[in-house]
Amino acid sequence: MTTRNYDILVWGATGFTGSRLVEYLALNAPAGTRVAIGGRNRSKIEAVRAKLAAKHPMAPISLASMDILIGDSQNAQDMHAIASQTRVVASTVGPYSIYGEQLVRACVEEVTDYCDITAEVPWVHDMNRELNDQAVRNNVHIVSLCGFDCIPADLGCLMLAQYSREHIQQPLLHVKGSIVGIRGGVSGGTMATLGNQLGIEARRLWKGVKAQMSGSSTPQSQPSNGKETNRAVVHYDQTLGRWQGFWVMSIINSMATKWAGRELNYGPGFSYAETMTARNVFMAIAQTLGFVYLAALMFFSATRNLLYMLRAIPRPGEGPSDKFMKSGFFSLHLEAFSETEVFYGKVSGSSDPGYSETIKYLGESALCLAFDRDESFRPGIYPPSVAIGNKLLDRLRNRGCQFDVARKIIPASHDSAKKVQ
Image 1 (cartoon, rainbow, N blue to C red):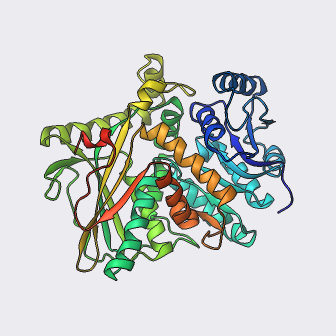
Image 2 (cartoon, helix red, strand yellow):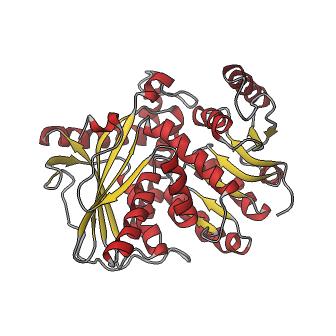
């Protein structure tokens, strides 16, 4: 790689998540890290830069001196010009199936590492199928799914698979995840992506669910190993002693973890299932129906626009307050099955999972790509566990994220998560 002007470019710096990622890197990147910020509107980016610089005048990475790069996400020439100037791109511009393709293609061709927070697994699969061979030849790391979907499940399963190999000497066959506690907000960008997936690309999304990441570098699913129990959507979990209902991110996390399990050979027929804990059977049914109802409203453009008009959901660029995000938390319980043993994992965070934790995940992914590269990194277009797994896991643990595994059920380490155990 030729000498680049910047170590990391934050693409989408004016968005709700992008501006907070700029702030995170200014406060947490190593001294001397060259961070640039980019998007399509110079005046808006300048306003964000000025606001953050006034808020953090003594930040280790000077916000006021960050360079600005301008471009159109759907213009291939713009994306090549931008990608060629930086070692790593961290993108928060979604929906990625609309605004992400040209940037990913440019990064592959310009030999620039990349990370994002998309949850659009079928789109990631398309990029893998079309560009993975070239990315491998160019030794480029394109790391998608670096947000709350799918870091906890993805790295949690990686952690459990390694524990099973090293301490039990058996392959990992199945993991059952349960969100046992969560508090967090939602931004307009997230709702726009949800609307795009459920509306414009509904058939494509569900074909992706059915295909389960089939393709040149994502082999067909293996036969069941018999460890995955056929559970009803609403069921009683004997281990936790709690009722379980549908969890909105379960389909995405299942696809990502199964893909990683095949690439990293967790075990024959490895599978992952995920639910959300409820106080009783009635709440489990209610939350399941609530997710279905929201999906139905977001599916149709007319009802989607009505929700925007009534301010029932935030518009792009809007999101929860800093105070609310600081009060957030999540706790993910993992029950793992090898051939003869059952053991447990815990992944938790002490702030809003969709924003504060996601920003941390993406920021540390970008820093990992910029400064931690070694022979363990795998070039190509993959989930985080496959591309940069253990290095990123170490970084997140050092930033206070709980990723623990043991033979017995593990209580969450964060006080906020303990409240819901």
